[in-house]
Image (cartoon, rainbow, N blue to C red; front, side, top):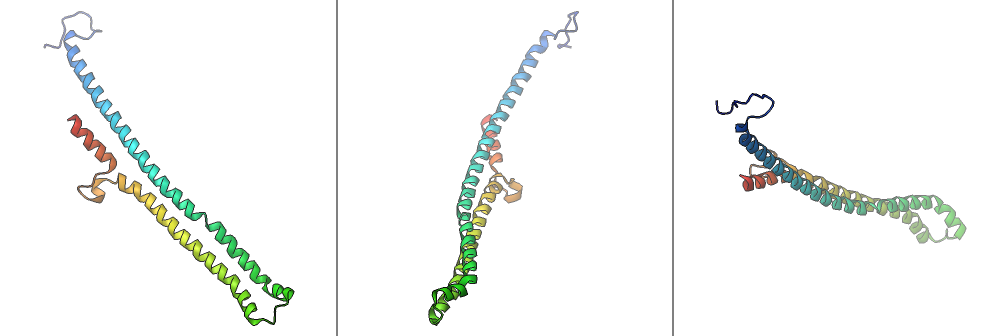
Length: 166
């Protein structure tokens, strides 16, 4: 057999196997380096996706920031509505039916408007959060889950790498 050496020492590789070993090593090193580069590109795409999702979540937080103000306004209006009879008596405005009616309606109106603004903020926050979730789902969905010609970000990297290395 051509790979069997006639040498007496069994601890050394036969000289004939060196080119085969070298080609296997070089090929493995090439495949490994390509895999590392593909991994780096997928990681970069993942970081980009995360940054876009984080921007959407920052918008959601910005919109949601109005909620404590709405809660405070609603609670203050509710407290003032409890004090309305005392305010009317202290200011001696009980004779003015129009002013008394406006005072009694003002507090619930403020509470309802505050609740409406908080609800709008909630809906917009949900929209931003949903869009943030969908960025990752869309970017990294496998082609079988979406449609045949769809490629996820990692599938695109692998296809691009394969076209350049094959």
